[in-house]
Length: 369
View 1 (cartoon, rainbow, N blue to C red):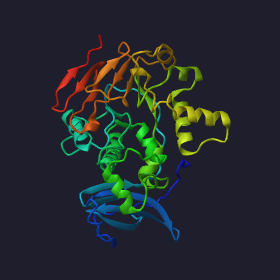
View 2 (view 1 turned 90 degrees about the horizontal axis):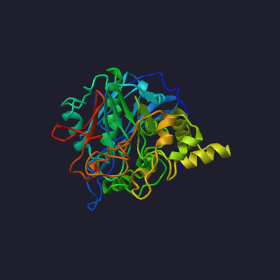
View 3 (view 1 turned 30 degrees about the vertical axis):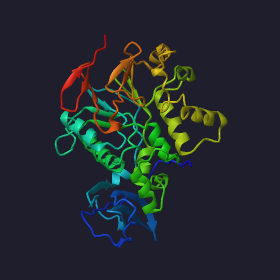
């Protein structure tokens, strides 16, 4: 299933909802179903020429639905331990640039629904404060994909990052959520790695995860606006990696991001563009490529580093027990197996020094010798 992305020019009216009772609650889930809580899933709808938000969530196995007319600046949702905040500006989701400069960078990958490990790392290393609010000032935080699947707190992570992104922007910093293969899988109806919680949620809501993140949903449209690769200083950040032959295609990072999003949202009728989109979404594309970890035929990165004017590639996708380097330190592997729910690390870059940020707040210098 594919969806079309178009730049929004939406709804000038704003709204506030601080707390509210649901207008509709379904019968409890069957006794053999887990009493899960999940959401909210928020869609923008036009009902009788009045713009509204359609909120759906699960509370202890019960489905709830609420329609709210857009009327004030911000809507704050809090129910059943779930929270979300949406404002007018969130309805536009402008495309971010592909290149930046920053003196402070942190990067994390493959969170896979493990919100506690993620939040602890961010708090312990000063990216957020104890309350979970942005405290990294003008620093840049990069999530190199794979928030989705495996774990059971995916929705909570997305709304947390959704709000943190705005806080970072206000502070002069930046949060970059990049697309990984699991984001793209959910958006394109490949749901083989859902946790049991989300399979149950699909049944209770009578919608697949792909439908819940469809075009017109706040989180779905937000995800469809994201980049797949960015450059900060002389470092490239992405989920899987860039195959050396991509350099021969002479695409800038901005063009690569555009073509990737274009194919995700609406494959082109032009055969050459569609073939390029298929390639970028394939096994040698930036969300799936694992060539940096093939010890039998190691990848030669010279073409890539020269063409994109970078010194290193910071990637996730291929799990390690700790953050480590590959290919003469030209690759930093940051998938530290957070998905297992036991441990995980954060890459920290300060004053051109690289550190492994540990769960207890300690920093270990990453050897680049």
